[in-house]
Structures are given as C-alpha cells and as structure tokens.
Image (cartoon, helix red, strand yellow):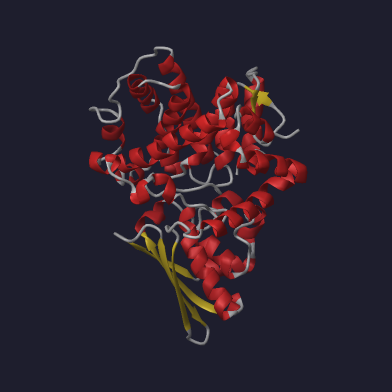
Length: 410
C-alpha cells in the first residue's frame, strides 16, 4: 500500500516539508524518486503506507501492525546494510509486540479515543528497530520508555490526513527511540506499567496476563487480516453482506425499501460518518460503503472513493434508507444485514471479517492480484516485477537496502 499511497497529496506535503527544512540523506522513499534521512523516511513511508487505509489489521492490537514496523526497518536496514533475514526477525519482533501491548490496554484505550496504530504502533516500531540494532534487554526497556512519552494519535482525526500521519510518526518515534537508547539516552524502564505511565494514563485496563499469554495459533502474526476493500476494516463485514445479497438476488437498488445493519457498538465511533462528502470520509462511512456495494461499485478499487461517489443520487438515496443497530458485547468483526424490498421480501446475510483465510495458496493469489493492481500503475510492469522478485527472495538478501531501492521510482 505504500507505493500507491506515496502518490497521495498528504505524502507530497510531507516531502515538501522535509525539502523546505533542508532534510537530506540517502534513505529511499517508497514509490518516489526523492531520498531523505532515515528518520524522515520512516515518517513519510509510514504515512504513505496508511494513506489509503488499505493495509493489514490485527484485532489483538486493535489496529494496523505493519505500517509502523516496516517503514522503520526499511530506513534503518538500508542505513546499516542489515540482512534480509535480520529484517524478517525484526519484523516478527515488532509485529508480536503490537499484539502484546494492544492486549495490555484493550479495550478502554481505544474506547477513550486513542488511535492504536499511532500509540501501540510506537512500541511495535521500537521493538523492531531495537531487534535490528541488537539492543540489550535493559536498552530495549529504556527505548520503550522513550517511545511511551511520544506515543500519540486521536481517533477524532479519522477521515483526515492525520490518521495516516499517526502511522508515520509512530514509525519515526520507534526508530528514534531505539537509536537514542543505543546511544545511552535515558528513560524509565517501566514506562508501560508504572504509575502515570502509558497504560495508566491512556487506559482503564491493565491486562498483564493477556499481554504475556499465548496468542491464538501461537503467534499474533498468524492472525493477520488482509484488506480486500479500500476502506476502514470495520466496514468490510457489512460490505460483504451487501455484496452477497446483491449477487445472489440480482435486484436493482431502486427496489430497496429498508436496510437494517447490526454491528458492534464500537463501530459507531470509528466508521459512522452519516453524510460523507469526500473520498476519505467515504472510507469511514458504513452507510456509504454499503450503498456502494449494493450499487455494484468496486469497493476494492482505490479510484472508487471520490467526492463524486458521495454525491451519486442512487447511493445517497440508499444511505437514507439504512438503519444501524449498534450492539453492545457483539463480536467485533461480525455484521448482520436485512434488506427489505418493495414487495415485502426480506433478504438476509451475515459475515465475520475477523477470520484469517485458511487457504494460504488462495490468499497468496489474492495478494498478488492486489499487489499488481496497486504497484504496476506506479512503478510500471518491469518495476513491479523487480519489486516482487526482491520480496520473494528477501530472506536471502545480504543488504535489505536492495528492497528499499527496488520499491522506489527510477
């Protein structure tokens, strides 16, 4: 997602800001021709990775784990010429940390209004960069302290450029925290759990047993969820319900009398913009995305999310016919939908978007198709092939900078 996200206006602004500040360096920017300093590359690549809200999800974290980890590792790995194997080890360390810290402070941390990708993601990036730098246990605890005092991100900014900025700042903060700790910078080593520390100041919960317990399937990474619709992940189950009903019954949208959606109450404060007016707001609107699915709009296509689609008459009419029941103590990823047609017929569907695909081969095919559709328009056929080939042999790379440079535009 970083390659197409690098073409977005918010990425242009961040690059322009860095250039105006005179930031220079040899760190690659994914999907672009410019280079910059490692810290700035982590910031810009992280923001670009989340710009289109089409990146992976893990419910143990409660956010997007990869977008803070990989940008920090690409920037640091290119700088120190880390091996591909070390990159993978460091990625796993960061990813697993995201699940554990997420579990530590869930659910009230997110319910209070904190964007987990920006907050918990700061620790993910720190753990990843710390592993790549070979920090000692004591140094890593200090690095977590440095990260804790910088961790931030507010859900109130969903639907604006600040949401992806949270991912970028978390990646930058994590990289900086690990590097400062390696140089002897000081911080409390118990900043996650101490009084007025991260957990006590940003959550009403402190679940040490959950954080330290065995993840489902043994690793949080095994429960990674990939996106196949370019919108907030909590809209995915409703979109699938709408698609199933439309494809099985083949009716025109004009026949819809009422739409009832049942979904977890937490979605009300995440993706319930009732009257979106921009493409970005559309990604965080249950009514909009369901209406798009019911009218046959390709919700997997980035180009579908525009200001124009929010004004489309049929979609606006469907939005007004939709009622949402926000259910407390509901499965977070489950949606149920009932659509009443003009002849009184009621059509129903349910979908749980929180289940990882069991067929790994099928999932790889879907991810390859997604990769080609997103990367080829930016890097070209040869560039996309070069990047995919580099990814396929990442565990044998002597210098992960090869991956960073393959992701850039030539």
